[in-house]
Image (cartoon, rainbow, N blue to C red):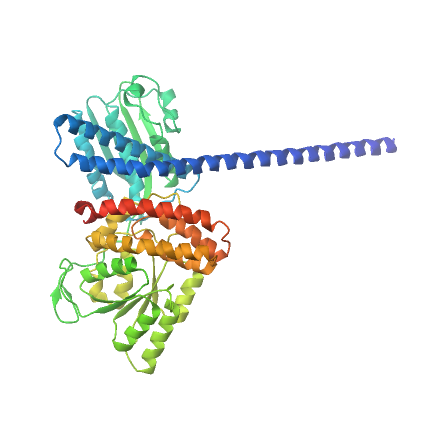
Amino acid sequence: MSQHKETTEQQQIAELEATIRSLREENGRLREKAKHADSANKAKSDFLAMISHEIRTPMNGVIGLSELLLGTDLEDRQKHFAELILTSARNLLSLINSLLDFSKIEAKKMVLDLTPFDLTDMLLETMELYTLSGEQKELQVLTDIDDRLAPSYIGDGYRIRQVIVNLLGNAIKFTSKGKVSLKVTLINRTANTDTIRFEVMDTGTGIVREKQGQLFQPFTQLDGPAKLRHGGTGLGLSICAKLIELMDGALGLNSEPGEGSTFWFQLRLPVAAAETESRDTTRCLNGGDQTEDQTGAECSYTILIVDDEPTNRMVLRESLERAGAGIVEAEDGRQAVEQCLTRDFDLVFMDCQMPVIDGFEATEKILANAADRNRSIPPIIALTADATMDTRQRCQDSGMIDYLLKPLNFDKLKQVIGKQLPDLQARIQGRHVIGRDNDDDTDQDGMIINRETLEKLGNNIGNLGPVITVFLQTLASRFTDISRAVEARDADAIARAAHTLKGSSSQFGAEELSGLCRRLEEMGRSHNISQAEPLLREIDRAAERLREELTRLGTGNSQAST
């Protein structure tokens, strides 16, 4: 009996072991299938992003040439055809942008840009456009914005606007008579966060309940005459849903056939700190009274800007000169040391990575020379695109008292200057963020030029034409530096050259080129440059696309200045 029991137990153990082996084998097969599925999905997203980028370049050309054509003397029939070309091209570019957003969301590369923005102003500006669209269809377009909204919130204003634009556009498109309205309501307020509800209401035909859930799925449209009349890809609402999810919000739809539709979403937005700056009279050291709104007046501050990239120097110089500071420039650390031997500076902005003498060594020499000669010791601010703790510590160890990340955030520039030169701080243009607080989220899937970034740059420095000219003049030489480094298989030189072009191109929101340069810089830093040559060819093509776009922008006075 005991022997039979033992035999039974052994059989059960053997069966369990066989089952475990089978499960392990099945898990292995499932993991392999999942890996292939992930690989296929990534390949699909990468292809979608690549082909979208390739289409954008000729489409920008078509749009630009159509706009130029419409600015010439045309017969009515020719003008009508040109307007149709421009409308079709813009519609196609909108589709391409949707595909890019969708591919980024699919690849989990969509990143929010959380910065202060004026929600009420953004809403009013957006509604101005749709009031005109509504009038063309004889629709009333109404706005109801809660006057309890805070002056400024922290969030991604661009993406919030994108959602509102999509919902308003759909409402006007699918409403033949009656009205479309936007209602924005503060529904809850805590110490520093507001919960805000956005509602877009229309008097269209409405949507049956069983079809409503399908609207937020990608590439989905409702059947019927409306689909035939209006077309589209069915991507817009899917992207909206993903963006609201990314912002930890909620989105929904209330609709009944014949009673119109209400698309709504809710967000919790932190209230931005109140502006502490005053527009009162500011006194410069030379005794002259000025207000923040005045420009061109002289002030006795002298600032040294040290950077080997002319574009970076020019962006910073234009902002500081508009505030009234005197500017001296140096192209490398050795020139900076020599400048500080002959005169005193109220502030020094020091790039960290430069030829001849880098910023760290130059800072140490400047401070040592000042101490030896009993001269005034200038406060030195680091300029760097490297946000790592190691670099920050090295800046501090060399004697730099603060740092600014590139591309510049002009609000942070104001803060840094305010610690050293408070009289100058209030007269520097702010509240326009250039790029992001760090550039970790810039990648090769970005657009040729982020127009919002370019517009904000113009708001800070004025006429963009001269800056574009300087950048284009140096673009070829910067690419040559990279090419020579790749040809020489010099990993350190590759990293340095790619870093320089990355920094200057990011000032314009050139996401595609700066993202590719970032990849090449990382290859150089890791001394893994086996794929440097293929990447160099991509950089060459991206640089040419950027050159074409900036040349077009730089030749139009209305676009090159703000």
